[in-house]
Length: 116
Image: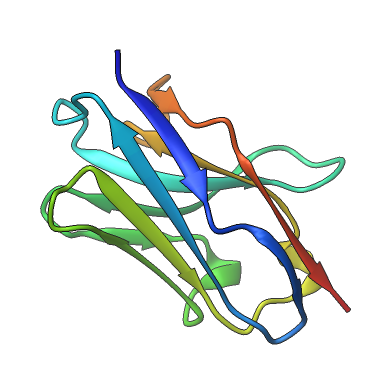
């Protein structure tokens, strides 16, 4: 059974950058879309960025212009490059294989904390 493992989170100061990685073990080729989601304390989980197998991307408005989602050449890895981080970006970030509103396959999540 396929699993997703996130890495690259941590503590960063306002204005800093982080690159999150998500590596899939097992076959995820049935999933056309990969994405990153986050859940801030006391808030619902929200979509941050999506990428399709064809390379189309979608971002939530609050991260546009400072965040890039990409896939590795082997297509079992997806990255989230986040720049100019703000305290509002703090939360648990989850990798997901599957379209935005599907059940899909989720990683366990990784903490990102942006200090002010």
